[in-house]
Image (cartoon, rainbow, N blue to C red; front, side, top):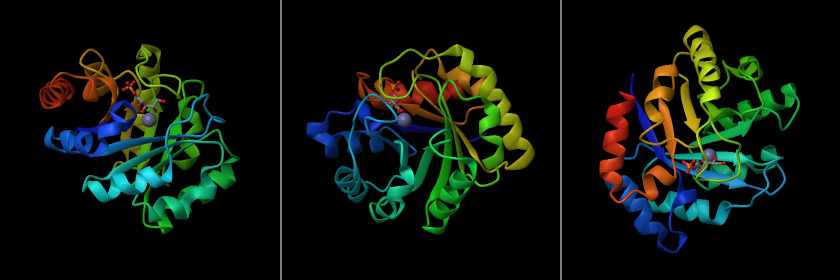
Length: 220
Ligand code: DX5
Ligand code: ZN
């Protein structure tokens, strides 16, 4: 299974963003993870579209945008014009039919739709959308902040989502986000994850290239 690493810019030094992006590219990142928070869906506010647009102009890596927002459907055209590659929305922010519509619109706009489960949402919440998405995101911390501890009780959920992907949409990526690092990547990979968001473990490592290489080896 091909393994992907997505350093999360939330952990970068914002005053040196272009250097940080370059560092992630040189370290072998497969994509850049970009966390949008609105202070409503999560109790924190991060960064939004003007910065996203500059980030996409500064990097050729796919931009993996994680919408931790209450109304992601209002920003889909904006996300497309900012150069987002993946747009992932949480399954519990709108009714099922509206979420299905939102995921289809993301694809029609030329981006890859993703659906996310926060810890309180079980694997069954993603099943109605599994054939509509290019990425399933299982959060392994409560969304809103970097640097939290990985929740090992999410491992069975990762395995359940992996089983559904194998059955119904084998091309779909299975991403994990939150507390991933040298000590947790292997367990998540064994449970079935193939795409790893790494914030603290990438940008705060003394050597990001070495850190990504050793986590990649652990995941493979
Ligand atoms: C948290 C964000 C994560 C965060 C991960 O709500 O979704 O992407 O940046 O940070 P670490 O890897 O430090 O847990
Ligand atoms: Zn994230």
